Picture (tube, one colour):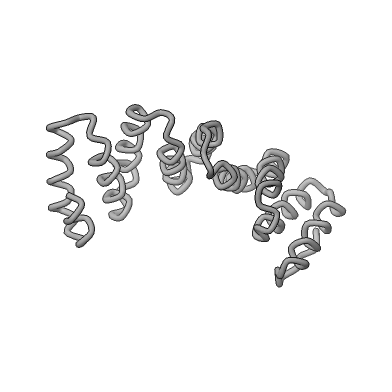
Amino acid sequence: GKTYLLTANYDAANNDLSKAITLNPNHEEAYKLRAVLYQLQDKNKEAISDLSTLIRLKPDNAFYHDSRAALYAKTGQSAIAVADYTKAVGIESDYESEFRIRRGDLYLEQKKYRAAIADYNAAVEEMPLRISLYPKRAAAYCALGDKLAARANWQTYKKHGGQKIEACR
């Protein structure tokens, strides 16, 4: 299935991967590849299903929670996506800050500004030169009416090479 997937022969890939899963319902690699295949075909419901199976097989794999969260977010199911990102954050990995940023972005979208700021703060602590975080955090502070904190974030953004500066309205 992997060779067919890499050569964009999606029907053959799906057939091979589905056969592998039928023969071994716990075939992690086959589920993983089929989830990728479904994502490439924009079959989000099917990809979510395979990722859910992967999570049942390997509940401590943060990347499976992260991948499923991204699909839930893409399909407008942000509350479920936040729950998956929360699980990913709770699993020890080198990517906790990335998961926090993604969850923070959803919180910002949901107008849960304090939660977004908390996630961005944790990420900034780990990655202070990740300048893309400062405008996001500034937007959350602006929405809460904290112009001083927003301004400080815009200034840090500019100090580290950011170009566009916005003021709270």
